[in-house]
Structures are given as C-alpha cells and as structure tokens.
Image 1 (cartoon, one colour):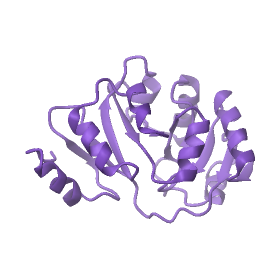
Image 2 (tube, helix red, strand yellow):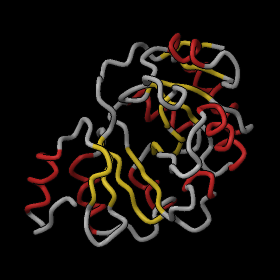
Image 3 (cartoon, one colour):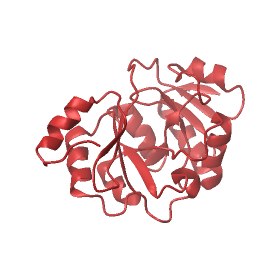
Image 4 (cartoon, one colour):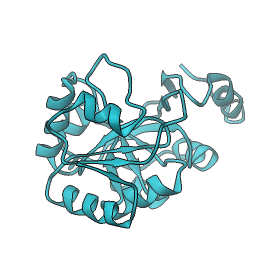
Length: 210
C-alpha cells in the first residue's frame, strides 16, 4: 500500500509500527525501511528483506535530542558537541549501545548509530511512531538507494506493509557516519557532511578523525 504523506498516513504508520510491521518512507536523504528498533522480529524482517549482512548494525533516526539516552549509554562530550553542531542534519553518530537493545539491531557490535533528520515531516513521522525508527536504505543490498515511493515498490513487491510517498528524494548523498564509541573519532562513511568540515570542528578539541 502506498499513501501520500498526510495525517492519515501518519496514523496508519504508527499503527503499523506498533503492531510489528514495516514501513518505507522518505528520510532527509533517500527512502528508508522503518521498524520499531526495540522489536527484534521486525528488525529481523528488514535484514531478510534486504538480504543484509548480519554483521552490519542498523542505524536509527530519532525524532528529538532527548531520545539519545534511550539508545546510547553515557554519550561522550564529543558526541553531544557534534550532535549540537550538526543536528538536525545528515550526520550519523555512533556510540555505545544500551545493553537492552536487541542484537538484531547492533549486530553484536555493542554500538548503535543515531541521526536526527533535517526534515520536519520526517521527524513528525518518527515521533508518532514512538520517537525512533530504523532507517536503513530501502533497497536490496548492493542496489542503488530508492529515491521515490515507486522505486521502493519496484524493489519490494511484498514484505512492506506501508509505503509513505513523501515525494522524490533530492539529496544525492547518504549521511556521513562517525564512530564515537572509542577513544578516537573514526570516519566510517563520508557522505553529505564532508571530512573537511568534521576535521575543522575537531581541531577545536585537539582531536582528528582516524
């Protein structure tokens, strides 16, 4: 089922997520696959749908800053500083995961990546769905990220309970991912936020990206 982004679609999405279902939606980058991150069966469905490597953690979108503590154990000063500087925005920050998070989400890494999206509609959707959603890209592993609701529908004829049509994704780069779970910040993926931008900020702290 494809519904245009609307109050009706948000209500349907909230029920779907609450019942353990999967949705697809436009993030502030590409389309993503959304599930309740606390529901191991739902997260497992996403991995099966994408054919995703079990060794790869699944990143989350959060609706508000205060959701960080629901997923990260004692976020560092650097985590909070980078979040305040670059959120909302296309920067995913990885920290030490709370121990109660399902292994299907963390892939046994002990870490979890979070992002606060720079899009009011996306944050509203995440908020009505409980404040956090998985947001791995809506495509089979190895294929190009979906940029429209129809792209998602073409990729997945079955398996998704609701596709929310939020229009075409216009951002051509995925989010940048920085791991802050260790003693030094480590760049996992360079995307919309450049390495140079991050290096400039880290100079103020006397640190550099590994």
